[in-house]
Image (tube, rainbow, N blue to C red; front, side, top):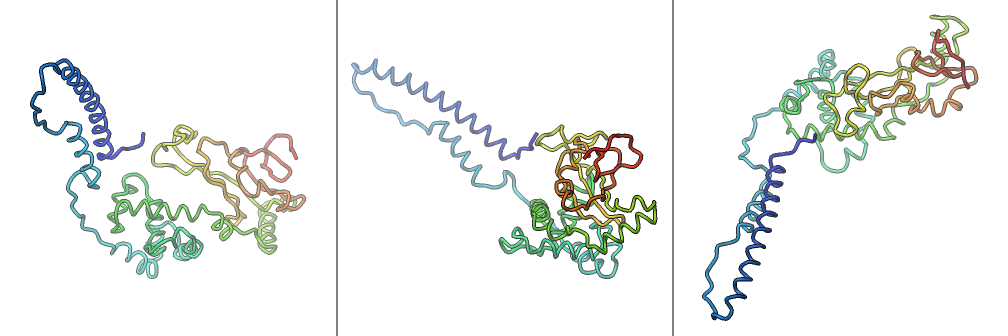
Length: 314
C-alpha cells in the first residue's frame, strides 16, 4: 500500500468532518425554517447573533493545514558535502579502489557514463547540481542494500535533502532509459572485434563452434520491497521481488545488447524477446552464425544451447 503523509491523513479526516457537519447544519436550518413558518402569525422575533457554524471553523482549519508544508515544527539537520567531494576529487584520482567500492565501477567507466548522459535533456532543463554529483549519489544508492540504502542514510552521507536523493535517481534513470543513451553506449561489434571473438571460441572449444561468437544470459536484479504496481508479478522463483535483466555479450564480456524492465517472474525465454538482437537477428547475424544460450532458451538455428536435447527450429 502506498504510504500516506500525515498531512494527507489529516486533510482526509477534515474533509469527512466538514461533509458530516454540513449535513447536520443543513438539517438544523430546515428545522429552524419550519419553526419560523409556524410562528409567522405571532409577529417578528428579535434575531439572535450566532457564532460561526462549526463547518466554517473546520474549513479554516483545512485552509491553515494547506498553508503550511509541514504539520510540525521543522529543525534543520547538520549535513556536509565533504564525503561527496572527497569521493569525486580525492578517491577518484588517488584511490580508485576506494572509489569503486562506493559507486561499483572504475573512475574510467564513471567518466564514460557521465559523458554518455550529461547532454540528456533531463539535465539541461534548469540550473542543476553537476551531473557527476547526481550520478555519484544514484550509483551509491544503487550499490547498497537494506538499511544502508535508506533515503535518510544516503542523504546524510551526501549532504543533501531526502527528496533530492530521489530527484537525482529519477533523473539518472530517465537518462539511461532514453533511446539516445542506448545508441550511444551500445554499438554492434566491428569486424575486428567479431573476428577476435570467433578466435577465442575456436581456441577454447573447437573449430565447428567458431560461428557462435555471442552469448546471452539472464539475471535477476533484487528489489528492496514489493512494487506497488503489478505487485506479485515481481515475485521470482528464488522467493524475492526482482526485475529480469538480459545481457548479450562477446566472450570478453563486452555488453552489446540488453533488455531490462520485465518482472522477475518472467521466464528468460520471454524476456530475451525484448532484446534488439532477437528482433533483428536476420540482419545482424550472418547465415551460420549463432548466439550461445543455456537450456532456458529455445533452440533456433541462430540460438544454440550446448547439449540440450530438442528439435532445432527455424
